[in-house]
Length: 345
Ligand code: NCD
Ligand code: ZN
Ligand code: ZN
Image 1 (cartoon, rainbow, N blue to C red):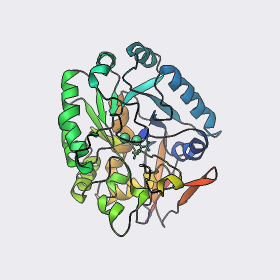
Image 2: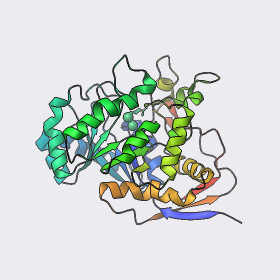
Image 3: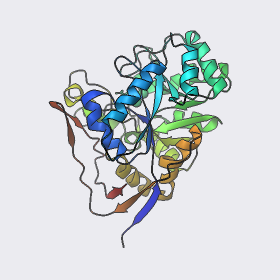
């Protein structure tokens, strides 16, 4: 008997499309399965103003191969000099869907991020007033905090005080990697939490045991197995707070396989097959649609995509291990087990 099921076309609520040759390679990999994606603004230089976002959106649409449909949901990179009125206008025109907060120095291209939250108070107040969500990379950057504790410490010392100081601000805690993140998001009425494909599959042993695996290195770094299990539980529970944000974050191989390798896992291509395996193993295939296609739009006040995709179980699917980018390649996330679920979009 073939096993097959159909769900609303999914969306990706945290995606890096990059620019130029990298974007040409990775954009079709997302657009094949996903209807929309929240597009991260951490380009060099970052997407800070409404004008930057409009120009980036135009480059994305120009790079979209003919015959594919995809809607980029643009974000602005919050800096200490961001103009609240520019944010208000960009939201009112429908150009931007969220503002992205990077604590300065927390991750790839985050040096223009926020150091002193007093300097972004005006922007946060406008966002609370107009209901524009803030997507947060939730890690402290203090050198005396262990990298495996940086998410939990961020919640307590930065995120919770910030939310209390800005009533009405809607926040998405992105790429949560810990039980602490799960518990905090779940306990807050007006919050969302995105979970990546790879954090549902790998723990820190995958990065470090038997030799260092740079293609599993991302930020926030994968944690202990007990945290991975908490993430799987949250994603497969049907709880509306949690939705898919792949954080597919391509870097060319020479910068991953490097003495100081970049953080980021590229997972756009095989995410839906990976998720089907994770949800099947949890006995929750019927909840994949909520996680990938329904909970995200509900948080953002958008309708689910009208189209559908069909997943069918069969012989293992083979996805390319690498994709060419200029003279180099980008490596696809390897879940470490065979993927039996074929996706028809
Ligand atoms: C992201 C990137 O490469 O832009 N890297 C990552 O490890 N997740 C940045 C981010 O989302 O923090
Ligand atoms: Zn991040
Ligand atoms: Zn990211």
